[in-house]
Image (cartoon, rainbow, N blue to C red; front, side, top):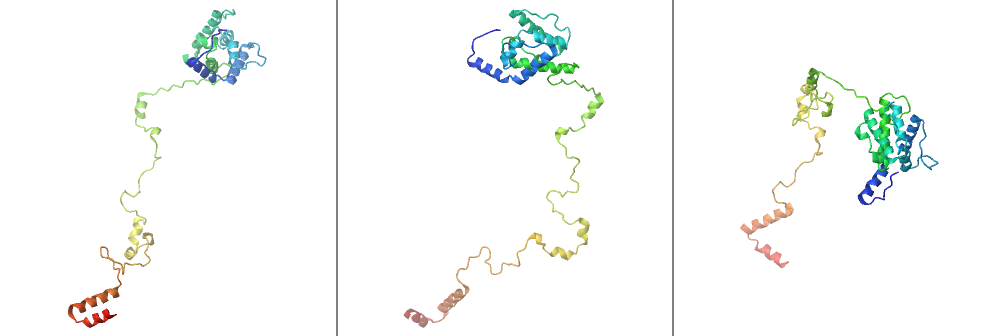
Length: 268
């Protein structure tokens, strides 16, 4: 195994993100799938409980032999010679052969991983994802053995004639919405009064009924503006009888002798 010193700063941050993406349960399922197809038990070292973390997963697949045998079971003859030597360059060669054979088998480049991701235990979650993608592709190719992952969909390409393509341009797609055939037929136009009574019934009604204000128009319960001050007129605070007496007094002062009355008032 390639050992390197601890990471710091940005490298440490990237390493922690990679470790957080590793799912132990998915990794165990991938290991069980490899063992079921190859018929060989993976070597997890001194661990008695099998794979417990990502280091056990990396150590079991690091030499590349198990994954090479796996691909030979899915596609016989893909890897002609699997290196069994413990030399690092031979182990790396096994991983490289596996990746190249996977690409020939039909895996996309984004589903593969780098050699150092497995050999140096850098991004082991990508190794797990690659095995799941390989299992889904095997199902697409009608492999009848143990399965893992989601089956890759088969392309269903449609070919339309030029006439059909031209006709499709006349159709309004559902992404534009639909009114389900609704129209404004029979609706009252904007700004016009609402016709509650149908037109035919309107002609039969007695014209006298048109003079009656319906209760829906509201009611003032017989109230009127009698006795109310007209708009713009001054408000009469003094009562009418006092106003009349004042007018009578002014009349006497203008034309009649009221000196006696004034003297009597002053004496009081």
